[in-house]
Image (cartoon, rainbow over all chains, first blue to last red; front, side, top):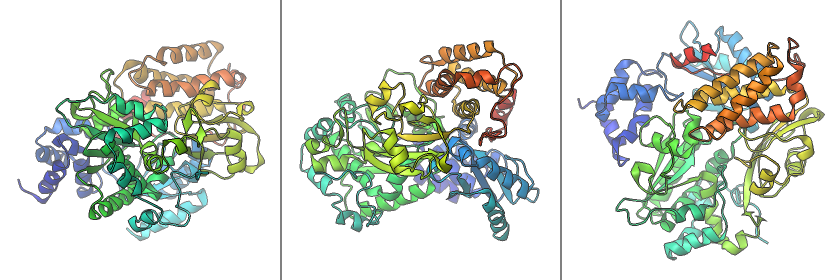
Length: 157
Length: 438
């Protein structure tokens, strides 16, 4: 039972007066260790480490956008399409990525390299349009910048 | 004359992410001063400064603290709301990313004032860079023995707008789905883990050191008497120079948009102003001389919100804008109460019907009716936030809505820059199906 993952979650639990508070950091950790998403095995590991049921853990994971219950590509490209980004041309940026990658928003390239997503406001409205690549903000990104980003992702894969 | 830069003071010529440089601009002197004072005296300064919450509601911080339950036998918690997610808002991101020690110092002073030793900062999951900056600053403060007996935990969210609602935030921090609680009881009595809890926005807490430094009397001379101090105003949309600008409360929208923002981008005409983030009622160009403070903006029929000003130019279709805002609130509705869960979907459905030209006049009445059945009838403010853009655009730009009716379709087709904007659906199976039903 005393796996490295289990031990790390025990440390997270100690930060909080009640151990359930560690569910988000534990899920994030599990996601990092399972290639960016939460297969049922990962959800069970979190449940065991927190002394909770898998059903409880799923109920949490399914509530939050940054926790993935389906496989994702090795890279994640997220394009904000909320108002300020939309006004600054987010749709053409999203179309650019979709065209360059050959996937619809929400999809993953056939080779499993990139998942493309449209997301809600990322808090970069003053530098719109915002694109988040593997957790790092790129702002602003215009349609003309798309192919360089895709090339970069393929080169670093 | 005190400087009008309070949040961002010193950032121009110092890297305030570093403790040594923060100390060069007087950092942590206010903490030392506060710790030499009785807790009640510290809160007296904050109350005397009439520090109003910068998160949106504008509730005075001192009065909130006065509601904290005493002698409960439980700890008192301080929770900082750093879940900035309102479309248009990006002020807290700079406050944390540029001056993390100012926030930490504010936490430590406030903790002393309310006699708490447990602080939680709940930061939205997407703000990874700002999280790293805060963690590094906290480590520096800990090494320099500034924390005393206070524990500060920085807790990352995982992508849910509703966790910026204070009771949704508490639920999420406790390890539940971030669904708001019915009130009463309010957090000062029954908050985190059932204990008395003070919750304030990042930008509210980050002003606390300056209040101690200047004294309540000097602080109150900045801004307007009903709301002293400054705010970080976030300018975005069709504006020439978007970005964050710190100015005293009471600065007019004209000064903010034209003098600081350089006016409407590409020399276009101003069509609409959204003054406080996407959730607040819209203002028209003739209301541009409204001062940006809580009371003035409310007298004009809108809200100060998160001081996030979106500039809309004359190409933009107001139905499309309302639809995109409604899609956001539908996506973020937590599903706990019926008016919001069902109402947000109705709004999207009706606005889609209008935009594509399939609506009749009675659909505008139905849209009004749905707004009326949501407003003030939802468990938390998200239900209201979904209504304000829709109902205010419909009221102030009604002729544009009417121009879509009876098969006419969008009069700005091919012109509006947000035409066909793709709104995200949930990543999770099941949710996506619900979105398709709409």
